Length: 314
Length: 314
Image (cartoon, rainbow over all chains, first blue to last red; front, side, top):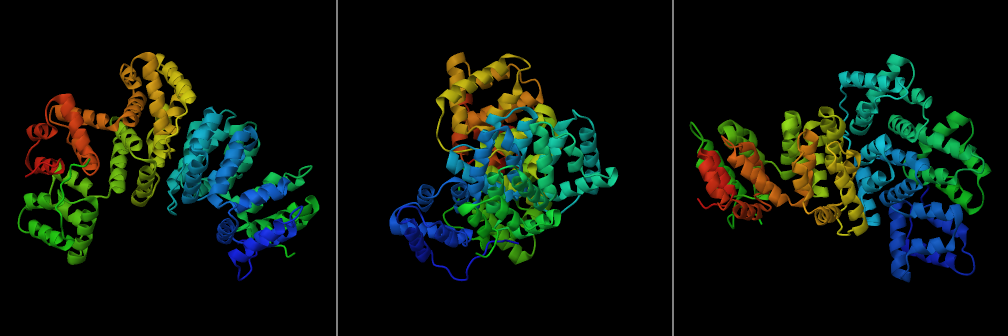
C-alpha cells in the first residue's frame, strides 16, 4: 500500500496559483510547496504542471529548481517527473556515476514489471536521444555489461506457470556457479536475465531447500566485484523487493551523514506504490519506525518533504 | 510499396460465406480460396476470420489447415496470422530448428522497427508462455547467444541523429575485429545490438570509405560459423533490407528443388509492405522478373497463391 496522503478534492488551477504565491518574494515558502506537492498523486501533479504552464507560461519544474536547492530540490525534482521519466533520469545518473551505482540499474530493471521497464526505455529515448542499453553498454565490459544489458533489455514473461524440473536444473546450475569463486557466469546470466520472475522464485526456493541457505545470502560471501554486486542485487530485487528496499533505507539512514540519494530514491519511487508495506518491514527488522529514524537523521525542508511522502501528518 | 492487390469494396461476411462454400465437398476449391484471401489486407483478413467464427462457430485458420496442405498450407497459415504473431511463429520455428535458421532470427530482429519487434515479443509471450529471449538463450551459447539475445531484445533509438566521431571510432573497432580471424567480438556485438540503425549506417559508410569495401562483403570471406553468419545477416538487414531480401529470394529460387520456406517467408511478410521495391531490386540484379522465376520454379496452388501475393493478375 501507498503512504501518500491526498485530500479528497483538489483543483490544479488553485494549486498552481498557490504555488505561484509561494514563489513570491525573496526565498520561497517551502512549507506551502510541500503542503501542496507532497500531497498530490502522479496524475494531479501532472495536471498542476499543465495548469501552471498555461497560467504563467513557465515550466513549474524549472521554477522549482530555481526556488529550492540541495537534497530537497533533488527529491522534489524526481517527485515531479512521471514514473517512467523519473526512472530514466535515475538510470542515466547511475550509469554515468559508474561502479558505485550499477546496483541502482539492477534494482530498477528487476523491480519494474515488463511493461513498466519498457515505458522507461521509451522515456530514455525521448530524453537522451539514445537507447538505455546503448549507454549501459558504453560504460561497461565483460560479464558486468552482459548482465546489465540483459536486465535492462529483458521483457519477461509474466504468466504464473512454473516448470518444476527446470527450477531444479537451474538451481543446480546456480549452485555450481556460486560454489566456485570464478564460476561459469554465462549460464547464471542467462537464467537471471531471461526467466520469468515466478520461475526464478521457484528456482531460488529449490536452491534454499537443497542447500539450507538462500542464494542471496550465499552470494554475500563473495560480493567483491561489481558484477557480483549486481548479481546479488538482481536476485534480491526479484526475490522480495520490499525487503530489498528496507535494507537500502536501513543503510541510507545508518550511514554517517545519511545517504540522501538512496533515501529519496526509495521514498519518491515507492510512496505511491507500496511504501506502507516497506515501512512495516522496516519496523519489524529495526524495532523503530522509519519516520522516527528519518526525523532523527535528516533536517529542514528535506525532512519535512520526506516525512510528508511517508504519510506523516504535519 | 506493396504488391498485394485488394478490391475497392469487400464484405467480411460475404467472404466468409464464399470460403465456406469453397470448403464444401471433397477437396476444397483452392482457386476460390486464393481469389479471396490472396487479395485481402491484414485488417480485412482479421475481419473475415471474425465473421467466419461468428457464422460457423469454427476457427477459419484451423479449417484452412484441414482443407489444404503442403507448402500452400504453410504459406496460407502464415499469411492469415497478424504480422506480430506471424513473426513470433517464424522465430519459434527458427529457434527450434537450430543452427540452420539463426539467420532468420537475426533477419526478423534487424528488419523490424523497435515497436514492431516489441509487438512480436508480446505475441511470443501470449503464444508460447515464455519470452523470446528465454528460448533464444536456451538453445545457444557463447557469442552466438550474446548477439542473438542482443538483437531480439534491442529497443533501438530511432531518431536521425548521427555522431560522426563515434561512427569513425566504431568503424575502426569493427575493422580491427574483422581483420583478425578470431577478433574481439564483444565490442562488435555491443555496437551492432545497441546503436541506432541510422548511426550504424554512418558507421558502415565510414568503414567503406576507409577500406574501399563494405563490411558485409569483407565478412563474407569468413562466414564460417553460426556466429559469423548471424553477424553478416544483421549487418546486411540493417544496411539495406531490400537487397537482403532479394538475395534470400534469389537463393531460394536457385536451389535445387526451390526453398519454399524462404520464398514464402519473404513474400508473405513483405507483400503488404515493400515487395514491389524488392521485386525491382530483383529484376535489376537478375534481369528476369521475380514472377517469371516463381512461375518456372513452383507449381499448383502454391504457385497460384504466391503469384497472387506478388500482385500478378490472374
